[in-house]
Image 1 (tube, rainbow, N blue to C red):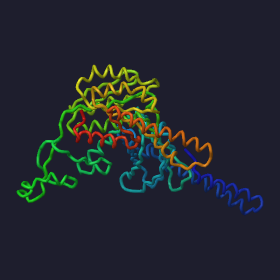
Image 2: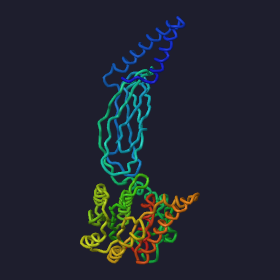
Image 3: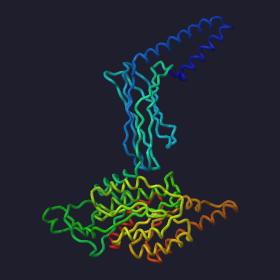
Length: 441
């Protein structure tokens, strides 16, 4: 049993009335009446709340797997067995890692035939992979009197696993079916020359190239028909993820490693939809995970399971070990999308010989990150001498990022400098660009 705020207000009024009885005798009579009234109201409400052994049922509904970096919906269905209207305060014991104190909701179930119910929904956005534990659903019930509450501890604790962002795959698939991928920022790349081959004829939909209209088929069907072309198939595309300490930097609560993992999952999906083979490699001081490139039906599930357990290490990344071990596992020339980060030009120069070696054996695309917060700071005005020196240092770091792109280009290495938020979109656009230009391998 818990006493409510309304009870303490009523108790304060009662005490004041009794106290005033020492000055005004009539208030003492009123005070005694208030005491008996308050006591009767409390006993009545207790009898109404406790006459049923289980007056409220609650059931939490959520996915057994959460998508990292996305909003995951959680709902709680509440059912009343009381024959009268009840007011409820619902607190769901979410995993402590979210550090949220606002998962508390008010609900009212009216009097109705049967068992009235209502559903409370909210979303959770995890930023780390792993196992998250939910506790009980706490429901505090009161009647219209509202002086006391009965607490129910409902539903059982449950664990959910947070996987890389698989919800993003569903979004891409739905938009691809409706030809709205451009809404996400996926560019439509023009087909060049004879880099494609004819596959089939289909009805025209908005967004198709006018040059691909098949006028003979259009005349026969009396509606616009277009030719469909396909690119060269069965090329190998590997997502190579650096797990060194440079990937521990965080943006919006998520580490660079998690951004790279989400982008790898999406790129693998797009790669297989383009009929190429998708693979995965992770490394730090040695090659850690190797999923051979394939287009088999279970390949996406295998990649998802492999990405789930990846964690950064505190040591320095060993690119020499990557070159040696990669040569043993991947013998066919492939597109290697390397997710890493460089704090400055000097750090990149140390790894440049190994990057050149990788690029000679495969087609290497180096993806590294731009610090958006640093760029925003550079754009702020300077007011003091200290601000001026800080801006000079910040501009130096921004300039070195641009120099890294230029240095890699001088050695024939493809590069992509992007922000963590735009990583997935930019990587897909770069892959599609390479695919259309037939420079994947």
